[in-house]
Image 1 (tube, rainbow, N blue to C red):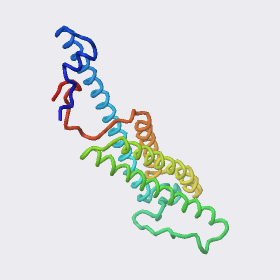
Image 2: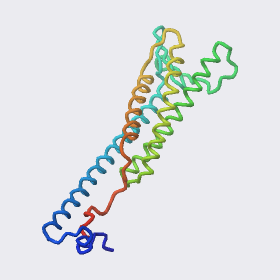
Image 3: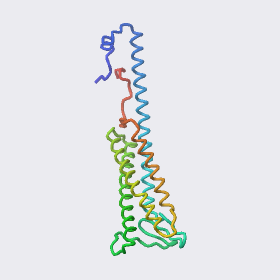
Image 4: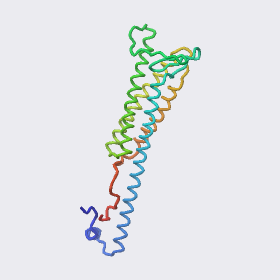
Amino acid sequence: MNSGISPVIFRRFVHVKTPDSFHLIITILQNTKIELNINMLYARLWVVFGGILILASAALYMASAILPSWGVSQENNRSYGLWKYCIREDCWKIPLSCSSLSADSLQKCMNLIIVRMFLILSCIFSGIAALIIIKVILKGGNPKTVDGLRMLSSASFTFSIIAFPIGIKWTLDHPSTKLSTAAILAIVGNGVNFIGALIIFITRKPNIAPSDSTVGVVSGE
C-alpha cells in the first residue's frame, strides 16, 4: 500500500502549480522527517544508556548484598556482611531471624532484617529493569517499555535509599567498626541508579521499536 502523499493531491492541497515550488516543499518535509528521526534516535540512545546504568547498579547491589564486608572492626579485623561475619578466612552465618535475642541485640537484628529485605527488593527491581533493557537492545521495544523502566528504576532507587542508611547504622553499631567494600559498593550503586533513573525520567518518551522503514513521509515508497 502506498503510504506517501500523491503529488497531484499534494499540489491541489497547497495550491502549488510550479514544479520547482512543489519539489522545494517536498524537500522541506523530507528534511523535517529526517530531523525528527534523528531526535528520536537520540532519545532511544539516552534510554538505553540510562538502562545500562541501572544494569550496572543491579550488579553493584548484588555484590553489596553478597560480600561479607559492610564493615571491618579495627580491633580484631572482624568483617561484617548482611549474611555472615568473618575473621580472616573463617566465616560464620548470621541467623535469618531475631528469635531468642536479648532486648539489647533485638533492635540491631531488626535493622539487619530491614536492610536485607529492602536491598533484596532493590536487586529484584533493578534486575528486572536490566532484563528489559537487554531486550530493548536486542529486539527493540515501545513507549510502554520506557514507562516500565521508569517505574522499576524509581522503585529500585527508593528501596535502596531506605536500605542504605539503616545498613550504615547497623554496621557502625558494632564497636570500633568502619565502613568497608560492600558499603562502598552500595553507595556507588545508589549514585549510578539515581543517574540512570534520572536520565530515563527526563528523556522524551521515544518509540524504541526498530523500524523497517526509513523513507520520507512524501516519498511514495
